[in-house]
Image (cartoon, rainbow, N blue to C red):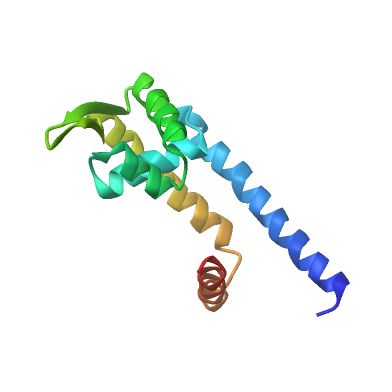
Length: 138
């Protein structure tokens, strides 16, 4: 692959990534939630109550950053903290009922956003893109 084509591939990738980020922010606007906070809510919806350090691992961010994310989500009434009965030093975090409703609505909206974004591709192209992205992410 020559250098010009490589640049074009990289530029195309970053262009698509930028479009997806903008669409994500637009999709999340009704809930006044950032993409990073949405990721945390999604993890809690999928995996349920967990320790803060487990949430850090799922999000691949530092413990201090996780605390800041959880603080913001708690201020919005989306999560609640409680002491871990198995370890008094640890804190558990879980979605509130309101948080569960918001997380479900976000998941539905993002699924629709993804469907609309990728509908320009054939089913075969979507499958091939999924395969390529999985390989790049490995």
